[in-house]
Image (cartoon, rainbow, N blue to C red; front, side, top):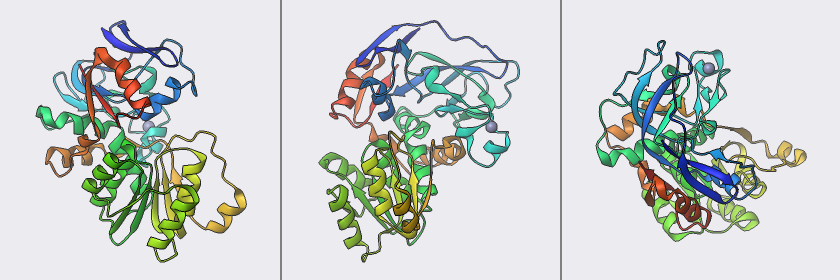
Amino acid sequence: MRGVVMVAPGDVRVEDRPDPVIQEPTDAIIEVAAACVCGSDLWPYRGVDDADHTPMGHEYVGTVVEIGGAVENVKVGDFVVGSFFASDNTCDICRAGYQSRCVHAEPMGAIGTQAQFARIPLADGTLVATPGRPAADLIPSLLAASDVLGTGWFAAVAAEVGPGKTVVVVGDGAVGLSGVLAAKELGAERIIAMSRHEDRQALAREFGATDIVAERGHDGVAVVRELTGGLGAHCVIEAVGTQESMMQAVRSTRPGGHVGYVGVSHDVELPGLELFFSAVHLHGGPAPVRRFLPHLIELIWNRTIDPGKVFDLTLPLERAAEAYRAMDERTATKVLLTL
Ligand SMILES: [Zn+2]
């Protein structure tokens, strides 16, 4: 099969890779219908994380083509959505809703779903079948549910978004924009999106943002405080993962408020005394997307939400190198790879 390999930082190629086979009776093999490049794939691309002939990709939707002997919840021919951690969905951690930290969790990034086929471990717990074969225009939205929408949704839930709340979203990538959409669906009264890019501001407004703040750092915090009567927001979504974005999130939250942080943390250090006196709740981490998948699939299937709009470039898998370049150079927010 053909699949994406990062030979070294900045060097993305599409190569022949071995066809996946069933290794455990709990595995399934899917034929990938669409995959995409994640903001987190840029960390190795830029050399911040290692890359050495690494198979790439952890977002996927597709059709089950083979199942192991112990798989009961999906069958050959089902169209399925999974997320970036395989999980059994039965252990105590999963049952509490934290499937991304399942005691048997397996990272899909190690398997690499930017490929024609992928082995899905723990298929019964990991995969959710759609009600039928999706219309072609639903596939981008279902793919968004696999990671960015599920992550933005978790961030909103972790930030305790609900009716009457004012929400700030730090980060205007695909996850931040999905967080805006989630906040709207969860009934937020006011949604302040922090963004300096006009096209992303427009999508944020389409997804439900009521205010846009282009300032960053101290200035950004000052504007948020001005917009919230000097108090800060009830709920803040942090979707970047840097020191600046995390502090911007904490400082934009009112005492007693909640920060939902889902940007993969890179060299973030929280000053203890400031955190102490901020009196904010911090909750986040790798999103347990599996918790939300059935609900998100339903909202997409009913055409209540259209999260697939975060994809602003579509390329065939064979042109994956261009996809990475476009995201690295920010000429695209998120790139969908067709198979
Ligand atoms: Zn589990």
